[in-house]
Amino acid sequence: MPFTLNIRAAIQTPDHKRDYNEQLFTRVATEYDLATRAMSLGRDRIWKRRLVSLLPAVASPNCVDLACGTGDVTRELASRFPAGRIIGLDLTPAMIEVARHRCPSENVRFSVADMCRTQLPDGWADVVTGSYALRNAPVLDDALREVHRLLKPGGYAAFLDFAKSPVRWQQALQLPLLKWWGGFWGIVIHGGPEHAYIAESLRQFPDRKALRAQLERHGFELQRTRSCFGGMLEILVLRRDTN
Image (tube, rainbow, N blue to C red):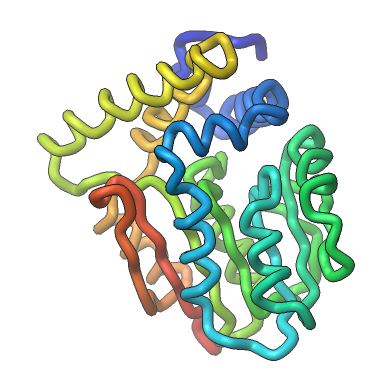
């Protein structure tokens, strides 16, 4: 699928969204870190560090970082759990190449994989993380089923992502603002409004209230939350049921 300014139409179906994501993140891989730092006004690394710090202490966990991108959270997991085994997965080979160069740790490996079909064994992971991951899933229910399958009973998941207000008038302000902000930095850094995608993917994503209900239906109990950037983003820490 070639680059298009009509992002909303380009991600309307799960297959189209998956293809769009793969091509988008291939185009921006080498400059992705610069873009995320710019769009977050330098806060992105702090949020990811906080995400990992909110996880419970585990002696030597198996960890999976979904949609790991260039490996920021993967690297934080390796630092927090030096005796653990950390796997970073991403759909885009170009992102994985950047991540491997940035995180040459002995307890980390990176692989190209779809977050909805990781091919890892049932119950392998003590911890699953994702930064800007669930919003990019072609079908959110598929991603949540996969996270539940991957986690051991009682295991933990932690996610950082943009959070959509359940209030319609607030959405009417939030989504155009995000589209403008992401598009602006896309033009500055990549030469095209690439990160206007954030707003369009958030438009498809459940709001805070609906997301919590969906997580509960999939067997997750909300443990902790943290708001970031005045509530524009949110960190969720979840515990998998023991069934």
